[in-house]
Amino acid sequence: MKIGIIGGSGLYEMEGLTRLEEHRLSTPFGEPSDAFLSGVLHGREVVFLPRHGKGHRFLPSEIPFRANVWGMKKLGVTHLLSVSAVGSLREEIEPGHIVFPDQFIDRTFLRPSTFFGRGVVAHVQFGDPVCPNLVADLAETATRLQVAHHRGGTYVCMEGPQFSTRAESNLYRAWGGAVIGMTNLQEAKLAREAEICFATLALATDYDCWHETEEEVSVESVLKVMQSNIATSKRLLSGVVERIDPGRPCACHDALRYAILSRLEDLPAQTRADLEPIIGRYLPSAP
Image (cartoon, rainbow, N blue to C red; front, side, top):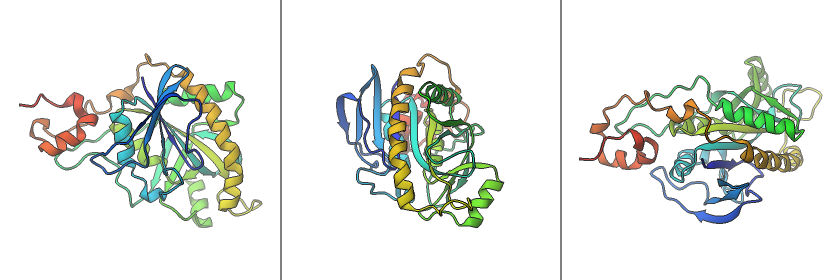
């Protein structure tokens, strides 16, 4: 087992790691957001990556999602925890609370969301887009640490970088959305294709713009809550790393077993090489 952590806005480093090693990878999908940092936390191997790069260099639409997840897989990550700042679409999800979503709605339109193509077709199941085991681990850890949290809920992933209009915000509420963010949907899809267990820590920083008695969301107000959220998320991540059971069976690790429709014997050589970390276990021996 190796645990990957993708840090969101404000989380650019992971404290407590020992035996640190930096990995700068080139991938078939471009350069990752930054160098991967591996180490040991509570006796377990961990790989950390800041999603937006150090110094927050990438807009949500510019994040190299495929390179980031491909790199995690290449480094042997089996379980991936993704931290994301979000707006709350529900009264009961107060700024400062953490949500562990179990569903997504995709409102993005500028981002590639699959490793496949170029000679190989695969359709993974995505009805339940996060790992239920990881969500349970996160909720149980949050309860033990007395962190205000909500287990389950729908994460609406919008393109950004602008925040929602009031009409959009109310529409997403009518759809049953719990939180709104700009990053996690592609990571969930790509982690499923890479057969990596995935879960999100959604850190509520504001009430978006639907809440009539609250100020409209602003970067200034978000940053104030974010500082507290980041400290809480670090405690939660540290706790859940200890809790994950590496021997527990999970369907996430076999997501491609019946998903690949192409004859792998006919794959173009370059596609075969590029996707080896993703589909290597299914590839026939090279002639």
